[in-house]
Length: 421
Image (cartoon, rainbow, N blue to C red; front, side, top):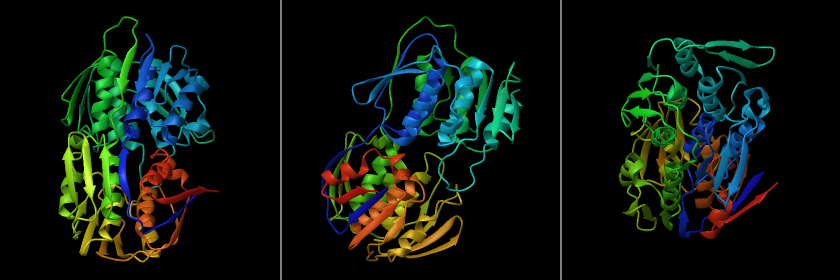
């Protein structure tokens, strides 16, 4: 699939932020732990990774029923890991989040190697080493391409993660639903908080939220009851739309943006000279009033600047006066989108796998470009919208994994964008 975009238009209107993919996938996995009743999840984004995670659960016997457009009822009473569709597991990185809840509930299962974006080395070492230290036996069957995991009794009650890994933290939180555990060097991202709030609803006691030291007390037996939880809105999508408005000199009201989760991106918008106003849960960006200037972009674990917004801010740097240094400390594959921007005329140099310099302002020209991963794909859409002439963006399935009906929502703002084979 491709997007054909005729750029150069100033957009105008309002857009509502959808539910957060990075919250939805671990919380869907955590519903495996609710064996005493049904779970109703609200504000579920209908995007590739989330729908695939639901399908993985469905392959294991999960009963699911949509309630309205964005709420779903899940009943995992008859869930069986032996039935899992390994082909689906290989499609998304988020399937690694099945390890924690399935270990807690079933003690033994097999799982294919998770898939996902190719943004650099993202080994499972942090997950596997932590689980091994806690007494989980892990073998990899190379011929079948499957991990075999088994667990009898937890070994110790404290784990120190080798890095601030979000998914490893989430996995251990779910594993600890039935095992007392102290997690040190835990991640503090908004989706970790959202998952923790859900786990509390099924009886898990968690203290230390918002810090790098979490203390989990296993749940007591709870009565049969229905659990209801609303997924938080997507701060990465909100940040993407804010950059889009600034870069295309557009006036856009972004509704439901959870500004409390956007401290670092909001500060960076100010550094770049973006004109915007915050009211309640909304951000209005006035691109025409913005006087863009170069700034440094350095990614950090939350509450620092998120790596998922590095690429969108990179395209903003092409429109800012001066040279912006980009330093993504997290993934060595996250700068590949810059080569696509250079096809459009961007003045950019990749210094090494983690650093680049982008100099602007530069007039971008339409070109044939490729969506290399989810965030790079959204970035190239922004670049195509501000560029002169027609751009064709390939492999947009990557974009669909994280942004729901992006073309339709942009068209309502006045963008000339079409989806084609």
